[in-house]
Amino acid sequence: MQYIDKSKEEFLSEIYRIVAKIRLELELTTSEITISDFEFKMDSENSKNLILMIYTPTRTDKSLLIGPGGWVVGKLREKLNGSFKENLIIRVESYIDRKKELDAIENSISHLREKGLDISSKKDALVIIQCEYDLSSIDFINEYFNPIFITFDLGTALLPHKNRNRIERVFKDKNLKYEFLNPYYLNGEQITDAISKNPCETICNNLISEMVNYAKNKNIEIVLFNHLNKDYEFRNGIHILNFLKMFPIKLNSLIHKGRSLDCPLLIQSCKRNKITKTFKIKQIVSGVYSGLVEPTEGAEEIIKYLK
Image (tube, rainbow, N blue to C red):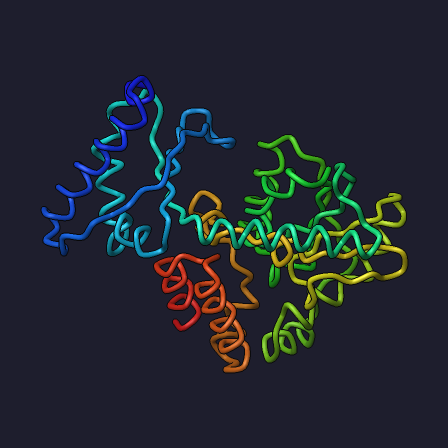
């Protein structure tokens, strides 16, 4: 890795020089960009990838470095990529957003401690994986819990074959403990009702009793369910956490290898139900304002639900 052999100052100067040239080539405004720090990390999912994390002091610096549509950082990657044996991936993060994430996580840990759940040492947790939103949180969950994964197969209306196969392939590739459960199948009336409302509320939250019973049978006291209406709930001796609300992760980190596994019922509901569509868009916009969702990714998500 040629650039790692350089001093940090030399490599940082190289980044500044290349970025300035790229912005000039793209006929973008000449702007002074500040980079606070950078580091290299190996990709936990693919040893052939090397991740260059670039940290900026503000979102403005981050936006300038990324460029419209990601063109600047994309071209920066192209110019640097040949200098490494590994495939280079560049991620840009502002310290302001990172501090918000860390503060939110610390507050969540303190909140759970007040509820009688101390996660300072890893505990077993039942983790429900139903869609891409859930699937892509797997590596982050491993940082805090010893997960046992389950997926509810209620029929192809909620879990199409391609989604089930994709989820199972990830479980196997990562050598994870998992199980598919079939407590019942959705009938036509239930599907119609779910589409006319919010599927997360009409179907996913109806599964909570199934999750609690399964956890108690396995002597597990924690359930992680990203579609819980609340951040946290204590039911029948089981701590139920909405992990992605309590432990915020950026949207661009959640896109699992660029493949979409969206809930088909949620997509249909957004097309037919203005309330669901508005709810989903507000959720995305809130993530953008809080710094947890990149503006570009947020716009792409919104367009998907407007189609």
